[in-house]
Image 1 (cartoon, rainbow, N blue to C red):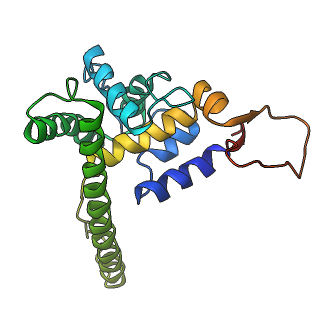
Image 2 (cartoon, rainbow, N blue to C red):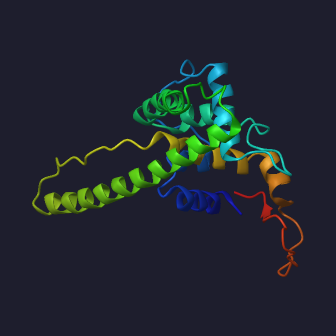
Length: 215
């Protein structure tokens, strides 16, 4: 699985294009991003690691926290997100904390694994419904833009709908984990590339996905 295939998989799982994907692929900084070095503290990284661990918990293999995915999220938001997406992500951290307080009367960091899981499953469902609504509006906006351009009106502006915060967290969790050394070598079957080509490899039930570190 190369990086482009991984991005396609994440887009399917989360119901929308991966935010900042063009810069995640190239590992370079977005020219429209702003310096977010002061946006995140070590406590924020700890919090994001717990969110990521709830999404991808340790089982027979290490989970997202072992790969320090929370720290990866802050770097990705800093380098690959636009200023508006950065604001949506940071605001989303507070929304997630508030949602946990409202639902369980405790902080996310003090919530039980079961409570965290229940909350994130709920937020994931909300995110999918939100993304479907956003996709529908985007389609209408695209058609409207084509009509206005055909009329010679080049000043038409699409309605900007911010991405859903939990969708961003989920996308970055999957991307950060499956591109980390732990994700590549522990959660997936790792085959160094370049290496010997074998067009037919036996698969046994329960085997991990075969992956080579590419692109």
